[in-house]
Length: 152
Image 1 (cartoon, rainbow, N blue to C red):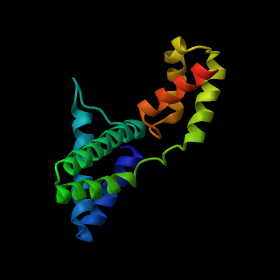
Image 2 (cartoon, rainbow, N blue to C red; image 1 turned 180 degrees about the horizontal axis):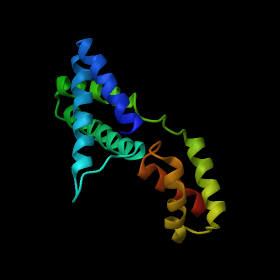
Image 3 (cartoon, helix red, strand yellow; image 1 turned 45 degrees about the vertical axis):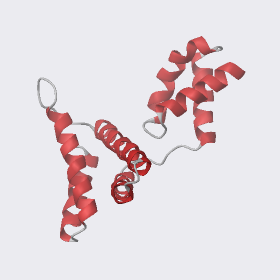
Image 4 (tube, rainbow, N blue to C red; image 1 turned 180 degrees about the vertical axis):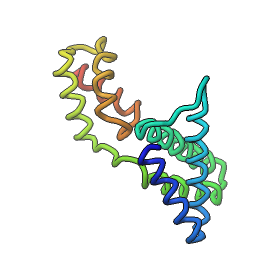
């Protein structure tokens, strides 16, 4: 079992004992999503920490999208619940990159690949994605790569 999954299980036990309903429900949901991912496909497998992190990132994104949808529909109580769940998931996610940190990673990837124009975006993305590891959104990364390749 991955360390992150073990941490989620331990924290679930603590939340249950503390009768923290939001944390308990959120961690149960996250562990269910992880288990679903483990048994998906032709044979069951144990997820690595990186794969567990990918599941948590996907779940956090769902919460952010739900907040936007509920806010747009005027459903404040449901939006607040999604925000609370998102805050619980954020405890397990890596610290997001600042704009300057992302720019530095993209700059280094451009140097590593020798890319010089926007047509080489894919080559740069292949190098940047593993370095970012869930600390920035895909759209944010693509925009920064395009900006630097266009201006460079």
